Amino acid sequence: MKKAFAPATVANVACGFDVLGLAIEAPGDIVTAELAEDDTPGTPGKIALEVEGDARLPREPERNTASVAAQTFLDRYAPDASVRLKLEKGLPLASGMGSSAASAVAAVVAVNDLLAVGATLDDLLNCALEGERVASGTAHADNAAACLYGGFVLVRGAAPALDVVRLPVPKGLSVALVRPHLELSTRDSRTLLGNEVRLQNAVTQWGNLGGLVAALFREDWDLMTRSLVDVIAEPIRSSQVPGFADVKRAALETGALGCSLSGSGPAMFALCRNLETAEAVSQVMASAFADTADLETDVHVSPVSKQGARPEVESCAS
Amino acid sequence: MKKAFAPATVANVACGFDVLGLAIEAPGDIVTAELAEDDTPGTPGKIALEVEGDARLPREPERNTASVAAQTFLDRYAPDASVRLKLEKGLPLASGMGSSAASAVAAVVAVNDLLAVGATLDDLLNCALEGERVASGTAHADNAAACLYGGFVLVRGAAPALDVVRLPVPKGLSVALVRPHLELSTRDSRTLLGNEVRLQNAVTQWGNLGGLVAALFREDWDLMTRSLVDVIAEPIRSSQVPGFADVKRAALETGALGCSLSGSGPAMFALCRNLETAEAVSQVMASAFADTADLETDVHVSPVSKQGARPEVESCAS
Image (cartoon, rainbow over all chains, first blue to last red; front, side, top):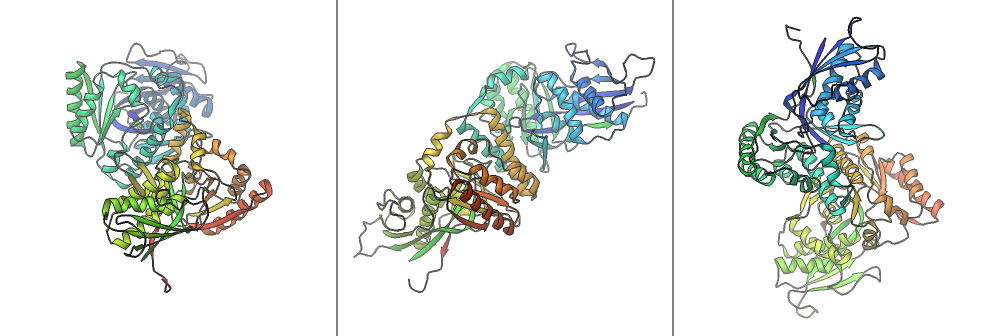
């Protein structure tokens, strides 16, 4: 039996719509994988699934991101194995915290560990994305890549092959992640954006993305601050999150380098120079959600985690 | 009397439409500046202009990029001085080689040197851009910033202030710049692009821009190669350049990291790992223009020049 943990992630990171992602330390999803014995349910080459958590999560293996990702892995690397998965769902659904990616990534890491296939991170990522495809309709790798690799990643492109560029993480760089208790579907948020953008806005966005990448290499906090601006998704999607403007203002006034939606929201993230600032920023963000939109929140504070998903040491009870 | 040289530049650099530029060593424009004496024409606080080169260049000081840039400089930093400029035009017009930027930059560098104002590079850039505005209708800083600063630059943004990020130049990085003998106007090329782009293409472009910036920091030639792709301007503008596809293919087959239009063309550039490759690439590009489009070319080969515009030591005759 093998167990893997996969953390929450922040995708887009203001200026990097669909290409940037970063991992935090916790919370996350846990998947346990074990070989199906002869006397347990499970067809050879198939995944059986047990889910602990939100009742709305699909229990059918062909609809759950974790089992779809694991099934893709079996099909490619171990077609004769039968595996039982247990998903312990630590992340909230439709939160903008990379919940579906975490389930898919934890599943492939656990199964890879169980079967000792030794697949590469790129192999695992490709399998995890098949799980993501079930959840969001399209397979964007920004959450899954950050979740699997850890740290700060740029998904340069997806064709002909996924091209994940690991970016440097300046010492101290920390995240305040605040999730208001409301749900948005990534699919709906994507429709909201439409298929076209103004060229002028696109130029602004890629100028900022280039600035952010340079800032990470140079540990240039001022350039990072100037670059953490989203003129593509935030102006449209933020209207779905009550209190957005006030929460963002509070974060910036408290010393955040930048603040925007985490993925497609409703969670909001702020990047900060150190953990202490991130702590303070998370508190003013939570207060602003409460005061201006009467929303309760979950608050997470973490360094940008250099470690992504990983096998967990089994507990004594298992 | 002071003289300044400003080099040709490659703007856009495939994936960085309107935000990336790089300088080469030569050719370039030369501007000589001297104080107007009492017995020479020139109103106090005004620029007088003499132009050597293409007969189509505006001779009226209020229409030439060099004199407009210099006049802006006087208005801001030395309103009582009267200056005579001589522009020796070394760069061809409407070539995609940053010709108007070079004239403007050489002018402000010469005048700054003449009047010993000690303006910063950012001050000079802002004045030069007023000259650019006369030439192209809008003031894009990608050519002018590369021309003035040298090296490889990212113009992250222009508002509220110009934000020029100097990028690292990997050792050996060289340019083949091949100009076919035909002219395109930047203004027309810009109209061709329209005001909207597909979001999917914009995402591809900023993924590539992020990849290129990371590749410059890491000296990662493979990532540079994968990133030097333009899905925004090249697919539209390249149709204006006969032979484009064959020239590009020849460059890539001969070892270029990437090849695209220089600025809005018709000049084409190829980036190469070293000067020897750039030499070979420039020859096959010139041959392809001749063979497939019956076009004569000028060929320039140079390292990416860390030095931009600079005061020139006066010759003995002056």
